[in-house]
Image (tube, rainbow, N blue to C red):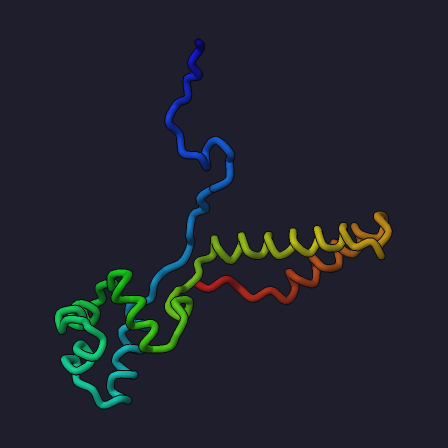
Length: 143
């Protein structure tokens, strides 16, 4: 009886399913705290009352006021209470904007190539037109 030797590697590595891409976003702690404080003031709550309402400690709000990031559970609780998406507090960097631009142009090019109503020789000029127009109207990356 022969034995098959298998090294211990994650299944994703064997099948090349999962890849990690660098994330180029920044969390805006100041905007997050400001949104929480504005909503708290609008509801006429003290920090202690808000903490009781959400099951959070007063020290949590003290840390937020000093620019510390909340833990995931606190972040989610406050997002739900604010009724806001996490993306409202994320700022994209120039690297992300550049990658998204290339992804958008690639997606358009693929769609044009797959369109059965277009002749293959007509796709390249259309890609050029889209690329030129896209770059002309593209906003400058956020800094």
